[in-house]
Length: 402
Image 1: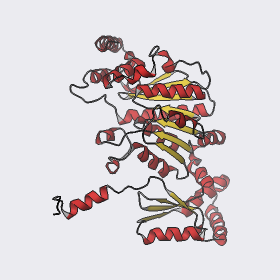
Image 2 (image 1 turned 30 degrees about the vertical axis):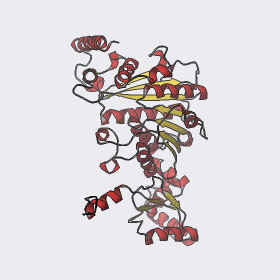
Image 3 (image 1 turned 60 degrees about the vertical axis):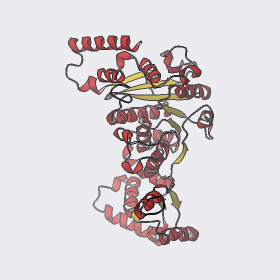
Image 4 (image 1 turned 90 degrees about the vertical axis):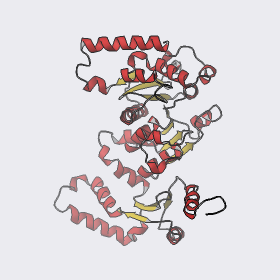
């Protein structure tokens, strides 16, 4: 042991735990002699432990996408091999495309160049999302505040080939109790949620442009979050802080862009849409909170926030188990409960709304309730169940002072 009573192993663990690894990948073009030397240097430093080279299969998919009428012909493989031979004549395959180095994985991956990569990655979207819609979706600048449910929203957008430029904000670090709803692993504990989400985006699209606001959103940086450059085209609100939700709507109104918000409600989702792009006079929160100010909302404690959000969602929309849970805060539970399944439902629904808005397609302008309970619970609409829900909601409103 040393003077502090630490063993050699404890010192090693402490030293490695303090090492900071970047969250952005590096992109190498190995047709450049300089970049070949730089990448070789990473090998010599033992900074690369794994190489993923599936480039030839990516070329096969690209060839098929560019020649769909040939895919099911008997001589497709022969035609592809001829195409591949022509590419190899130009330069060795390892010098084609791009190599993406992920420092947090100590891994380098051989990929197609940006345009071809996006084309192959979104090929199976056709024609559920047509070419023009995909282009609008991909070229958009999307802002996402709050990365609990927001993590699912972000990944749902990127999975579908949306938002080449994403601005994400969250001040929090990943805690063990977050792992019931955030798509991350124990290896991410203690890391900034914004950095974790950025890594996940880069794993899906290394060519993305990502800006992170690791201090979250506040009065000092919210204007920059919206203005960029470049300016946001749409904003997603997944914040817990009701006062900052107010700031988001102030900026959305000023910049004439839509706000989409998904709130989990037991196993269900409540999707709210505020179209400041179509009508800048739209009332904040659709008027559900009355005439409130940032100052009033910023003074609320956690219980006050819970009460205000419940008022916003509407007590009649809150599931029975969620109602009971909210009344147990500070007694038998620490905070309001959330489920991973509901986060995923919200992610899918909000991503759908974002894509529709960016493509100027018809969409609900106020609120939509997405309820698994309604669709899958037997007798949900029976007179007895209707009466029970009505009675529970009335009692909840009375107890909660709503």
